[in-house]
Image (cartoon, rainbow, N blue to C red; front, top):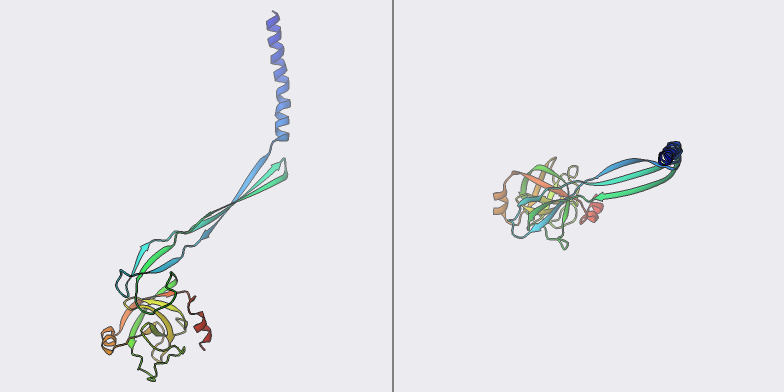
Length: 220
């Protein structure tokens, strides 16, 4: 009988204290909300020379994949009052697309990787350094030679580095009365090579002008 009374008293006490504990937990507990913002990091298209590739050839070797910057802001509340905030930032780096290009054309002291801005299709003819005025001097002041091309500055800015498929690395350094719109004129050293080139449709890979910004500023 004494055991039964003791058990009953414990049960009654537990029931009585339960609401008090629940109320205390609600008063001291925290709630939180999270705000996640994701910003895309675009991948770049890179070009590098490959000595094993034939002159003027371009080949994609890896596809690109965008990265992400993920910012998570977590806010902590006690009741309706904000009491703390935590910010976490996670960066997933992009995977750049890579092209290999044949080692030909304009010779540069810096022959590292190149970043592409765009690709256009143009009609390309060929000329010799002795054509035009006969001095071999281009509109930018650069001497005409293999790797120098004439362009329409409204389409391709003077001083821009290019890779002309079937030709090689080049710089837009000259203009011409017949070079309008999506037209270029590539410089050749030999008449036979210029005749062989003829007039053809080619893809031109346009790079950023990190090597030739000075030329672009000087040109008027």
